[in-house]
Amino acid sequence: MKISSLQNLFQYKSFNPIKRIVNPPALFKTNKDTFEKFKPLMYKKAVSVDEGKEFARKNFYIYDISCKNVKDINQMNSCLCNIYNMNKGKIFFPHSIKVYKNKGQRFAGSYTDNVVFLNSSYSIPLTLSHEIAHLNHEKMSPNYLKMGKKNEMTASGIDDFSIFEKFMADKPSLKLIKKEISGYACSSPAEFTACTFESIMSGKKLSPEIWRLYKEYEGPNADILKQYFK
Ligand SMILES: [Zn+2]
Image: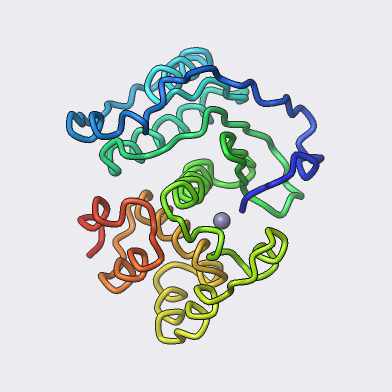
């Protein structure tokens, strides 16, 4: 899910305006080099929140993390290392991650262009992978905006529902997606790709048919991730 307006963040009480980073050492801009010289990153468990924040800053250029406990930040860094390694460094990370706890809130997470919000009442690694998938899908796929749910597309002024309608009309694929991933993954091509990425990052092996659909709907790094499918 993407929040397009900061007004929608009313439930996030301690929200601070995003600090604009001047000339950040963008990981993805130097992607060609990063990709060619890719070396897997070793996760190191932090003993304090500050040490965890430093690890994220140094390795992922995530400058601003609001997180109160070391367990959460370690879960986050371990997940980020895994995403970085499985995608061979070819991945965008947000510049800020905000962790909050809200048992009553419907959403496990959300994102804006450079911030990922995580509700720690849900699984941090699963939600973080899911939101990073959306963020990268949006950056890498020119058709991303046409892959949302109908109400999301209408709200963004999109009236070309052709990709969504094709996805919804393909009943055998929806049946397979529901069986292998979840019912929620059937709600739109964007949710399908984010849920697929989330499953793959968590170590689940999905079928080659799911990979074919992931590639068709321009899921992030389909070719790099192919080896993690059955
Ligand atoms: Zn989503």
